[in-house]
Amino acid sequence: AGPRGMTRAMTDGAESANSTRLSELLENHFDQKRNHRRGALPWAFFPDRLSHDFDEADEKHGRFVVCCVCHPGGLQKSAASSLSGGKQTGVFRYHWRTGQRSITDHVSKKHADALEALTKARDEHVRKHGENGALANGDDGVGGKRGAGDVSDEIDDDARFFPLVKDGPADGIGTDSDETPAAKQAKTGRGGARTGAGRPRQECPDVIDMRSDTVTKPTPAMRRAMAEAEVGDDVFGDDPTVIKLEEEMAKTFGKAAALFVPSGTMGNLIAVGVHCEVRGSEFICGSLSHIHIYEQGGLATLMGAHPRPLTNRTDGTLDMKEIAAAIRPNDQHFPVTKVLCLEQTHNKCGGRVLPLDYVDKCGEFARERGIALHLDGARIWNAAAALGVTPARAVEAADSVSVCLSKALGAPVGSVIVGTREFIAKCRRLRKACGGTMRQAGTLAAAALTAHGEIGPMIHMDHSRMSDLAAGLSKIQGLKVQRPVQSNIAFVSLDERIDVEWMVAEMRKRDVVLIPWVGNSLRLVTHHEINQPAVAKVLRCFEELCAQVLGPAGAA
Image 1 (cartoon, rainbow, N blue to C red):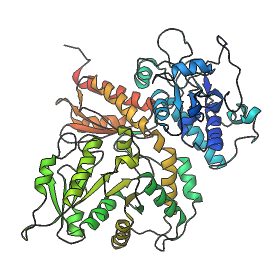
Image 2 (image 1 turned 45 degrees about the vertical axis):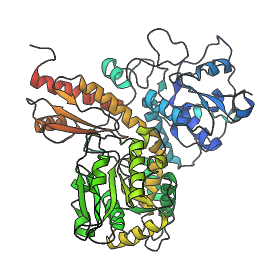
Image 3 (image 1 turned 135 degrees about the vertical axis):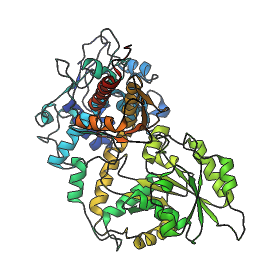
């Protein structure tokens, strides 16, 4: 069977197009959304017209999907079949049972510039026409495929994207460059979306804010969703958008119910407070955990819960033997241990991702000892992405999770608590006492729902850019990156001759916003507003300022 939609005639040796336009990617996105309900942007890179059905009878619904940026002219079915076994070819065997992780990884790592440009183009289209609005001119082209002219007029700069190839002529296979996109762009000025002259088409943000992933602004799609949100009164439980968000988050994390709260701090306060509902109960946590250091001791002050901090190891974990020893015996002299709290990913340990088997063991141990396991999931989306599992699998062992919506997803406000129905009912009651119940909260829930669909599939890109950034920083004299870098956070120590406050001030003059960390160090955080040109500029600024203090690298 041939490809769906418009068939492009292909023969061995036939001349193929050498690039893919941004307008074509935008058309592909709406085609995938309309035909298959695939709203994730990476699917725009795998249009139906380039795909081929499997031959195997037992996999009749599976297909070879082909990346249109790696292979603008498409591939013969035999070529697609032979290339589908490699991870770097831009060709994948896709079946609905296997999911889309390989496709998402490929696009976020190999075509980050194109994906970012597509995101902006999609947001602009949604701003003009609405989430389900028709493309310009509205009519389908041949076989249901719109012509490029339908949307190209809406795009100010209809950039072209070229296959990434090794040295030598392009062979149509779409092999990868030996350099990261950021390194290539910083070195040559190439590697992004290009015109015929080869100049980069991505624009560097006016201000590069790397203080946290909480600094992002709502996208145009989020703002439109907020403006048009259907709302009710959440105190009465009839705000339909809040209900939809809570149902979607419960399903996403594999729990029975969810509760929308204004902040992650309140999420932890309420969740652990419910576990420790008898005043004087004790919770075990890490000595470097956010709950212990950055939440003003609210669990002790407001909930009467007593902390039992244990030393965090460098990877963010707690020693299992120490956890076991920390559980109080049944003695009137001691508080009663009720819950073990873990942080995933771990902020003060440099964004380290707790291993999945470790979290599973903690959950099993907690059940055996009759206590609960709570996850502070401020960056649980990053953890799931780094582990390569679904959010539900990442929290499977936990009894409750506080899930931040305003970090990785970039929503403007809010977190959700997920757990059993009975547990969430108690959380809802305690939320009222904490002043966390909101009225027409659907305006905020709408932004979070949009962020989940819009930003969620691209979280790998934040990690990829941090990886590029950390690799570049490690090569600059006077800087030392704390390893390993596993997610979107990196700690960078400065040479003792470089004052951290001076570095922060000088970078601010160059429109790069950073914060000092412990000692003479910095914490850098990537998010969806940090693109490849931003990474290149940050590297350039660090290199210039370090050389200003220490002299050129290699100088006597």
